[in-house]
Length: 378
Image 1: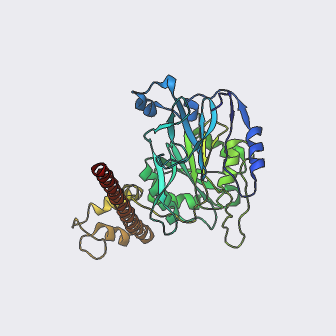
Image 2: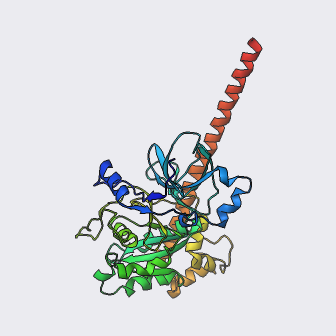
Image 3: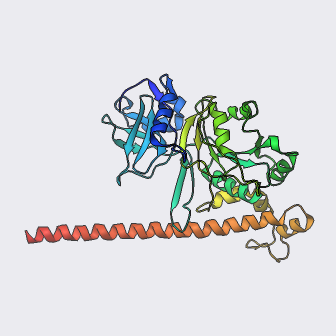
């Protein structure tokens, strides 16, 4: 890696740009300063993992983009690429790495937090989204595309990752009464952090700067068209993300962001943008689901029977809450659906992992037998 005091802001390729224009944009946004590790999100949690490492002989770098054949990294020395090969562990945007004097991979540091989901489609895999986050902005628009069940799904993932969620309601300027949406969110979590903004107005989005401050890492998630790219541009203080309008017939947006990438905000924090997620399945997320639906979990402890299914059993506190109107049927059904989904997907992924381990043992045994036979024949 070339030692340099100039750091170029990295961004992911968009559907409407080409390679040359991307490189031009990177060069245009170069910042003439030496970046410290703390500016890149380094903290004591990672420092304690370097007890047996001579930090004067290594480079500490953070993953800022994941491409098909390489990772893009950033360190106080500048930027570089790390080729992807089978010997590398699974990594994602936000990971911290240790590189040797030749800038080769040594280890990936233990993550402070990890945000993931089940891979979309029929693949039985876990898809890593971002690592080492301080906050996650769950972006939703204040229009007919607002969906409580979808927000609950996002909250379950964020809570499972051990990161503090912030629901950011966009398109405030186009909404006659945004309190309608806020009241719905407050009904299932009175302490949920909620911010309302007009993503096109930097004065309006300034309220988010206290989360995206120096050394803090924030990720944005949300479905396509809720205004994430517009919000990113406001937080960065420059037009860096491609944006597009919503469809008039259903207020749904068009998909513009096509990859995860790390940026620096105007307030000095680090921002990870993610593509709009058309499919968001849960896996190995039981604690996140229970945290998100803590009101139902608390009610369940009051049921007469420990194994109560909350259907027709006598003394069911959940059914009593439904009858009294203190619990909404939609919320109970959402809770039960997410529990079933994460259990099914989690079991499928666990089975695949176990199958992979069995195959690895078989391959090693075959190789050991082949080496033994070769020695006996020589």
